[in-house]
Image (tube, rainbow, N blue to C red; front, side, top):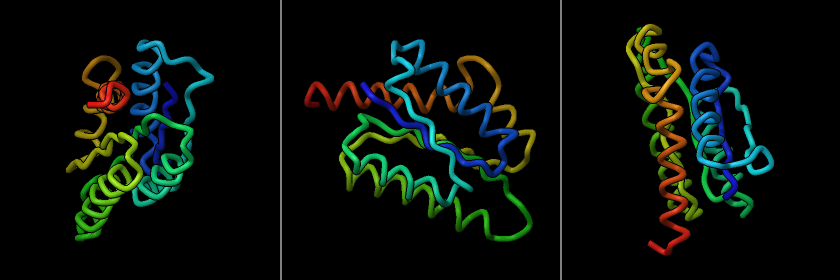
Length: 142
């Protein structure tokens, strides 16, 4: 099984921890370094674009999508969160490649960091587990 991770560099103090969690889960699931690719993109808005490109290549069985949006004083958060959610969904449906939504949408940096701690509650780890489960189900023809 080959898995790609697309991770936003924006709010890297959180997304780097999500990526670490995702990589840990993938490695613990038996996926070797040669079967993993991590691609950084500028922000969450770019995550679905890269996820679609990687999935369309035919080289990957799943794509873990990681990002972190922290609500501010303007509606920008709402527009980006919606666009990213719809973009990832569209990319997965258009390509037929499983993708997970590991994009945090929080009210504060503290909330984001609480979701990026080491261990089983890391949302990057959860996103990786979802992709593994879905890729295996797809491989079984389910």
